[in-house]
Image (cartoon, rainbow, N blue to C red):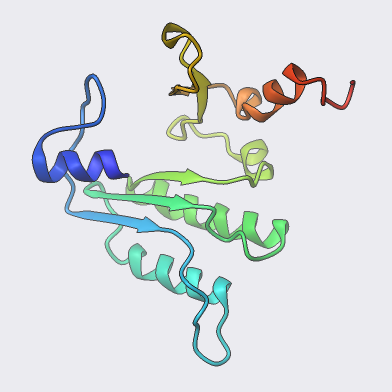
Length: 156
């Protein structure tokens, strides 16, 4: 999100090369500080903020969301995420959505949805440098590789 934003305002990016499309609406959605009004909580706040974003969804909108809906049950979070995804797809809105809701990946079958995961940059001598790459659904987590490397997998 920061690279995208800095590129939009300066023309420079924190990468070797980039193709970035100008947008009319740029949103980020991260958890707020917990000082909500009476009768409201984190989930209500997240839903309200997403709903205000939806008013400008379209081809010239991009959203960056981090662990949205993580303050509720997995089932409810996934249902809210499906609803959001349908709104995004029907309006051609671009979004980077970081989540640990793995159930959603099992149900989403749409060529417009791309899955990304960090991978070690082998060309950089494995110095904790990662590249974000498009991956297949079954390769979404780098965590399993770390567990295997240190003998902490379920099998071990």
